[in-house]
Length: 326
Image (cartoon, rainbow, N blue to C red; front, side):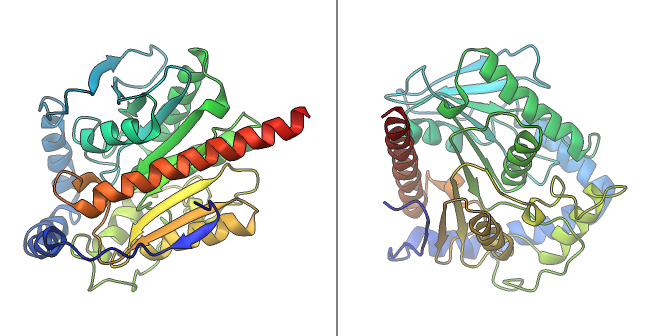
């Protein structure tokens, strides 16, 4: 597998994907249009999201879940250890949810599969979210968690960051903030359907094709989170940042997503700065489709691609280290 490449996976569209996208058109998209319309609705959705913290999502027997108590972190975190994982390496993932919903418990299907794919334990960050908290609070928690992992004795080159949607935004912002502060960077990062542009732009690409996210509501939500901020600040809209010096990136998106364009722009921006990027655009897949791996064969295949990406990063890093030592 090449790291720096664009890929359109050529798998036959499964009947599960056809059925699920049709269901989303009639349920998820209309509900999203209602929720992302009024501040009270967001507050209510955030309250409902709290229920996800008490729901226990079943996991396979070979996956052990336990709370990770890092005292310096902004909130409780979840830790998953997949088959073959080793304590010498670590991954940290930030959940999506538009910065107002979802938690490590709602994203367990991503957490344990990423752990198994990466062969390492995964810290699922329970970062502070809106409408009570701001983007700066979420970023502070992500940086805090990274510091906590390093204080546990893990080397930066043995850490991988990952995130989906708003979590992808937080992953990119974390990388830029670490780089700007002259801090050591992780080995790589994986962004699933990243929400990377919070400027007040109309999203015309896929506005009718996306079965899940209404373009106008995404724009409204961006206005809320950037109120009082400079939306062109790279820590607010990472797509406008300078990616020089960042580690290899893997970006996974669906071809019909309303956020597909900004995911592609992140890949282009990173490559302009000399960063190797594996950009995968999966035909007709919905927003953050890997979270649906329990029912979508394409989603399970995507985790196999992530595993190969991380293996290639590790192999390339080892070869570079051997060359430097020689």
